[in-house]
Length: 335
Ligand code: NDP
Image 1: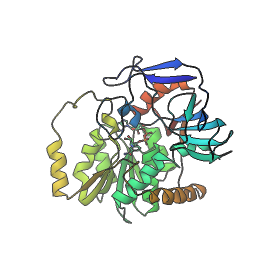
Image 2: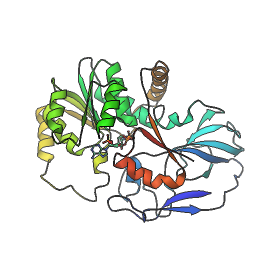
Image 3: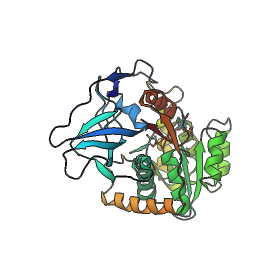
Image 4: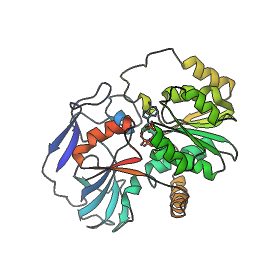
């Protein structure tokens, strides 16, 4: 059983000393346990936070501990009611080939689910994040302008497509011409701006002639500061992530932007609300999401793109790539 453990807490971007691959024997499941074989491992930006020893909504990974992560796995052996060999499940067993489980927080996907990796993306945590954050905190109204960055990724792509379904103008922000073209031509956003363009701020303003009513915050940094002067009175800002700062070892250099941020929130009466998808919404919302999203996908109203990385050994580099925008679509590892 190969597994990736946290060897050392990184300062800044993780490097070769951060994660270590180990080989241990496969454990025998006891009574009331099952043995899972990982088939798909999800890579997500929050994993960078789990490497830090800071107070957060979840405990950090311990030194020597297996990196956390959601997986789709096959049940190999089971003495648990409701799970039998051959079932595919959604579980939180992390970066390893095999894991034991007592069934807690495990969802049975059945024997042969269609495209099971979607349970890690559009039909799972990232898709639900977009749905709940946009609809419940953003409260989009027809005709409003919604801006979202990381627009080709699983959260941002879904935010913009739902915004369109609700009759809004959707403006994406993404890294590079290829991603921007995909966001407009395939996902159907009204515009998409490259955040690395020298005149990013001017291009964003031109793409939002009526200002911004909802800024779905995924990235922070330059995108956030470009958005601030464009916010309309009573704008809403669901704060979902700040990925541009996840690898920052300390405060960024440059002027203190807090006065500009707080001044805008005050003058424009902006509603700003952070959320953590696991515990910020009523449980009943998930069923609503699953039903609606399954329908939208089947009708072709929502499109979804994955980037598949081969092999557990490729996961550490792939996570760095994800944080730096060198992914194109939801990143999953095929074991
Ligand atoms: P993505 O697959 O979209 O990957 C992250 C993307 O962030 C990169 O591909 C890159 O896209 C973009 N990015 C990285 N650095 C910068 C930068 N400096 N400026 C602008 N963009 C940058 O990730 P997800 O869709 O999975 O997640 C999106 C956000 O949602 C993250 O912040 C994540 O932490 C958050 N999240 C929060 C949850 C919650 O419960 N609050 C749950 C799930 C996700 P590009 O090349 O286009 O710049």
